[in-house]
Image 1 (tube, rainbow, N blue to C red):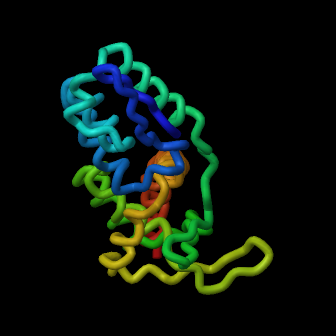
Image 2 (cartoon, rainbow, N blue to C red):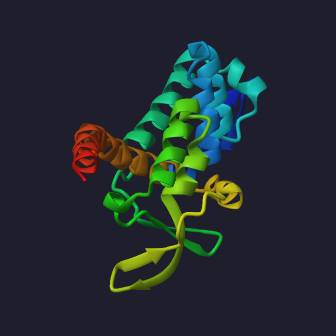
Length: 199
């Protein structure tokens, strides 16, 4: 979308994202990093990241103009599609979200747990590389993804091109799954230990 800024009698036109789906994961990670900055720095960096307005000009904007742009950005984020995208496409490759979270392996869960422990914001591409894998077969809305082998380096780079809204919806979905799993896991392990002792 176009934003017009009047400065010293001249009006210049700049681009601002049209929707939240214009923001990829790599950009979203940069935005998250600014959240700990002062409100002024956060606004400056956010506007600079999501528009073509030069930082020098952003710093010269009236406070009301900067607030108006930030309000528009917040509105675009609020209007994002928050439904989980089970299948996404990046660079002409289809990736599927883990189709059966009940069948998550210990290795997958351990890696996810580690990325969350280290810092979820710093490890979003790695986390998405575990949750989304190339689809090897698909028919009638059902798909099979590649098995998890723990080597996610290449896929992590690809995941940086994911749309921010896809990442957010996947994390919300996965967060609820992890909460449920954390309630079930201790009792399940206790039961298994009892079974093993009786055998």
